[in-house]
Length: 549
Image (cartoon, rainbow, N blue to C red; front, side, top):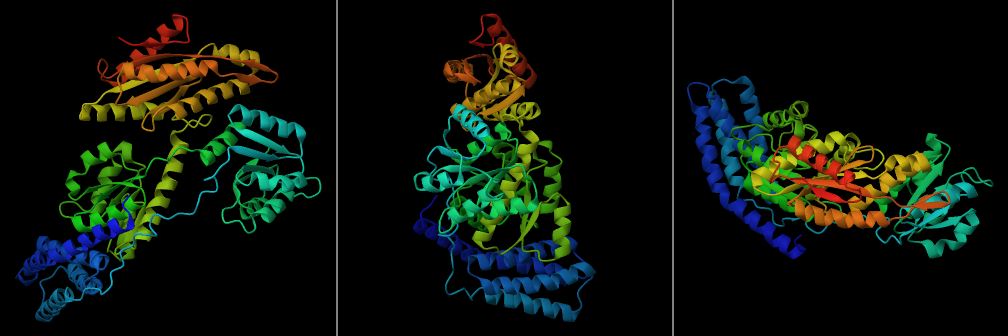
């Protein structure tokens, strides 16, 4: 991310470059305008002229030429009327178009006296309630049995837990626990909404609200609304599903930096695309720009964007046509496509969205508006996609999703000439764990291994729950030997973990088989080889890793 001075300088260069290109733009517009002077209607020439004028109407204000944008928009509106009629112009229309073309060129001399290059407010955000998380959880619950159960389960997953059986005890201790996450029951003997009332009181005057998860047997909207107003970031019904609770706590308190959002910009205007790219990069996103829409497929597969930002009017392929092509590719059927255009006709905007788009932003657009729109759209998309591709117990990719990602990653590794390893893991004697301690304990063992894998593997490695107690791991840019080194360390640590079942402790282990694309280049062969290596590892005594081939 550039500092404000560097960003300002870079944006000023973009402004100057845009100004330097205007004479050539006017020459192209004048040349395309000849199509309107012909004795017969020239559809191709008209479309070129419309696209060139449309481009200026959307870009001028961004680079400090507000008058240019206004003049271009007036000309574009006139062109739309002509385009609907598709008839040769009469003398009055030619005079009108000629006048608007002259006004357009004259407007280029009216550069804004003070160009606001948004930089400082783009990357700012509200502090996370758990930014300074202490590592402790405050459980405020008057039911001793439930409080002890929550403490035991959360301690098992590595959380330090303090229990408060009364609201008064929690109030008195609060100064020492101001950086904790609070698990607050709603209903207390002295007040049926006591948890909400106390949290409302404690939140007053705080710059950063206390993160609180409310627990309640009530599911009414009035209670949920009170919980939100008291700073509730989650609301769980009793009896509490421990797996869901731990998932929410993990997401809230994770110290890992979230992967940067990836945005693909498709816009034939290099200057405008560069400007938007800088704004999104300043907000911490990874951006790739494609200026020729006919060359988008390669970057689409290699870059794997979280969102695609597409101009509406481009040479060779319109934005709506491109959206339809992308939607016909299974891998990208759910990727958000946002149109960014100077088109103000609501009917055409709705039509564009109907052809596969998810949103429509109108040029010129303020940088803060662009960043906020892109961020919110990606967040919602990632949440929805997670429900479709994630296993409910572990939060890992489900069976179908991990197989799909393996095919995708194999194809990418082949294109880029890189290594890829695939591992199959299976918890040893898992049936005995379920039989001896019960399925809830077995679920915790599964979850503990999934959490260990997520914590210890790299951000670009992919982990999935293949089924039951079986896991699959895709390690990018790694051969079988490198994968074995990493996974064997995890195997040793997992075998040392002590799992709690009532008043008993026990340990377990996992076996693993690994294969890589140097010997098995197809998805089915790779998974089959890893599975056979896993089978051999289990029959060789378990708690070990073997490499296929």
